[in-house]
Length: 273
Image 1 (cartoon, rainbow, N blue to C red):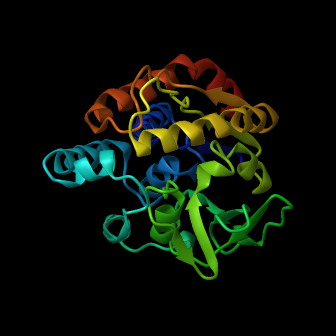
Image 2: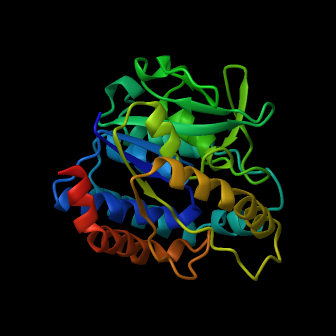
């Protein structure tokens, strides 16, 4: 595998990844494998199951509108701890991806999760790639993609953890926010990492905001180390002051992702063509 694309977490800022993929496709730069944490795993699954970025735009818009017009948006913003089960996400993703298994996805996909009991990263992927050995991560094919993504987006104390087998799993960003290192473990020769800034906020007056601020502080230095060691190119879209919860900014974020590709296009083509 030549080209590995690492998509980071970042809440609603993960919509940037749709624009990243659109920009890459417009320039015939096709990833051979995608590794995603949290929001990056969700966008990665949609793409690898055959949903083009242009279609994702309409899907995100529908999702955004439904959140803005239901009580759920209030719950996401204000519920204090671990009350979102996320079952609806699994159902929706299974339907959208037509129930494809990891072995049926193209390009390949690796979804990063964290075992909340042991602290170890568990990476779900296809059966052949799951044979990979690493001292840092456990690779597994013992999950369906929609289950793995549900685990990967499970922000501690906001989402109920996802149990897969004997593992109790939460947000993949806790072990690898931008999983460039995982792509190297899986054999990618050239790695492009998309790093959504941590967006530290001066407004932490609710439990979800405080939780995200804490995770961001812990993850920032780890991400810098991983990217420096494993990524050939680092793309860092300028998301400005868009915070984790601003679901009305998705279109703006997708455009920022596409713009970031074109800003790095010369380096990308030199690396990948």
